Image 1: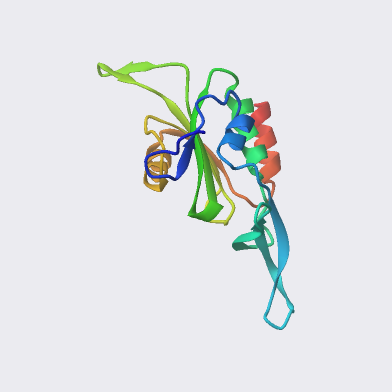
Image 2: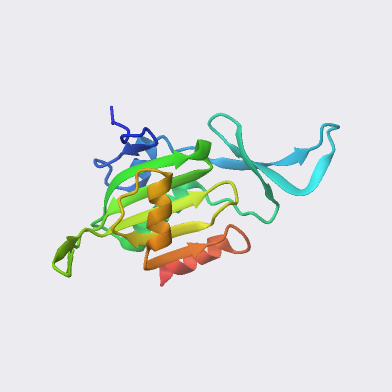
Length: 178
């Protein structure tokens, strides 16, 4: 059985050669569905949906009907397509009860900057609660929790992001092709 990281928020996935296998190992192979939001009188609340995790029917968050779901599998496969072979996935996990998920990997190249050896990492995050979009960043920060995820994403000099609205799936496809 795989060990979780020191704080229990992620799972080590070093032996997973693909993002799909990392997803399975980390327990993130569930999908998100959307259902209407109802008042206590069973009237539909217009323009809002519940994002629900399939594994346990947990409501992750109420989002506007403009929110487009990007499933964990689709999002993580995007990282494989984007960087190709050579990445070694290290950790993956969920934060805030599954509202945010991340995948973290080490890139094959190392750099020497100002005499220091820098290990470049790729962090990918996706939210299912509308709080953030899809984000991918190159970073020297090892992600193992919410604080290090925030640090990696906020200090990255190279990153890509897309909002969960409009044509998010087209944005992902366009990025894969270019």
